[in-house]
Structure formats: structure tokens, C-alpha cells
Image (tube, rainbow, N blue to C red; front, side, top):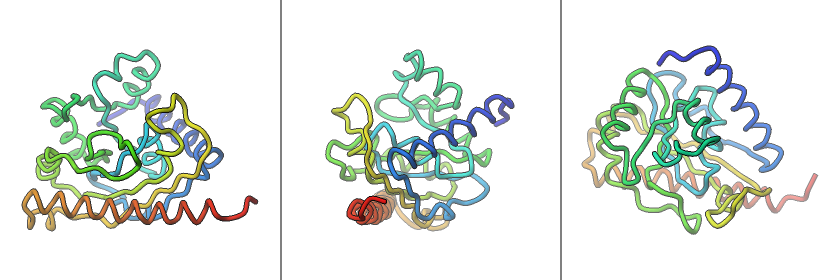
Length: 219
């Protein structure tokens, strides 16, 4: 997708601002970012703890990410403007919908990165939920590497019950990609199990690193 100079520059500026904020407020660290392919279409699959998650996952990559956003969010004045500026992909409450699926596949086929939260909604307790079966259709049509990501800390920093975020420790772990050739060997049930297992493994690693960091003395 060709974007204007303003959009390209604006994205880089927001990513830099998010990184600075993440380091200052959340002691943000990411492990394994080099595992994200440097070119070609990629589907990032992460657990979903908080409204912070798109920023937490997106700011660790040097490549631009495409985000999915609920259709209702586009009605918000400030947030709606921002997600339009970022070329967010509109999704229905129950899933991508035809238009969202078409736009997502177009991004992947144009060699871009798309961030997906396969649980479909934020967790209520910080733990990984079951993945939505509809993810399989997108994965199989996309024919791109899947990169599992585990994040821990956004649930504590900005839980669903809170109106705004507060200071905490956030850790992100990027796992090894699942390649299209591997995906073709599995049925949908096996694919979901494998993807969930890898996200869970990344989540556990992120949680361990976060706990260690919180135990270290300040300074």
C-alpha cells in the first residue's frame, strides 16, 4: 500500500513516542524481535491483555504494522482519527467480516505486517483465552509466516476495569515463526492448538522475565 509522506512520517513519530513512553512508564523490554521476518507478509499473533497491546506489540518492530480495530472505535473523535491515520482495518464485533478479511489479505499479499489478537477480545484475568476458529481461514488464505507473541504486564498496567493506565512493568517475547509449509500439514484443530501453545510459551517467558524485573532493586 502506498502511503503519503505525512502518514509515513507520522507513524514513525508515534512509534518513537510510544517507545519512549513504554520505557519511562513500563520499563518496556522486548526479547526476540529479530525473529520477525525483515520482508514479506507476516501475521503477528499475540495474546490480548489490554488496550495497550497494539502499541506494546507494534512499537517493537522496525517495520510498519497494520492494526485491526472494532468498527465502533471509528466513531470516536480522537481515537477514530488516529486509527484512520494508521490505516486500521475495521472488524465486526464477531470477527473480521468480508471487508476486513479482504483488506487484511491485501496487506499480507502486499508484503506488509498485520497484528492479530486471535482470542478475539481482552482477557478478564490476564490468562490466554481460547483462540477463535475463524483465525484458521485467514491464516490459510494468507499463506504467510505466523509469528507468535506473548505479552505480560499490560493487564496490570491497564486492566479492563480501569479508565487509564498506570506505571508497571511490561515484557514482550517474540517466538519462532510458523511457516506456511508447516501450516499445510495440520488441520484446523491442530493449527489452533499449535498456535495457542506457542503464544502460551511466549506469555510464560514474558511473565517470568517480568517477575524477575519486579524483584530487582530499583536503580
